Image 1 (spheres, one colour):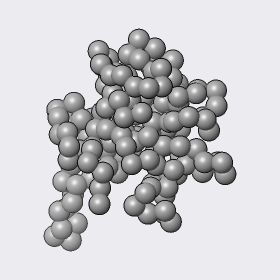
Image 2 (spheres, rainbow, N blue to C red):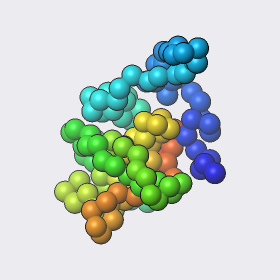
Image 3 (tube, rainbow, N blue to C red):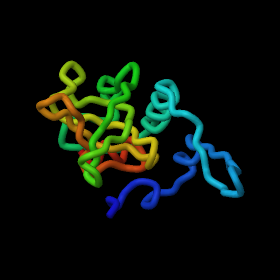
Image 4 (cartoon, one colour):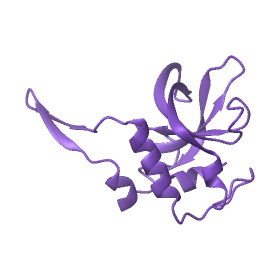
Length: 145
């Protein structure tokens, strides 16, 4: 069962503008294909969603200081998800609660498969695990911290 957030919970024009799709026909089957996610496109989306954003959380990250926590270049990592602790999803890490120590506190990542922002944690073995909270927008994910 999916968590009650993300695309299903909040279909809005801001999200859709970052996820253009093209129909692909292959052997009579129609499917939707997204363009590749690049570090630049992830950072551009993060900055756009944070512009004029309003949110609050318990971790001291505010609309006034949020850019200090944003990574200069998003980093791709395999992240274990609650649905399947045996397989990983490649996600772009975008924001660290402790920028100089990513394995302390929370990190927010973009899950391109679900097109949503997720809270992830670095485990003691250096692997990454996806929490069950996040949001369709980066400010929503920051609210869920």
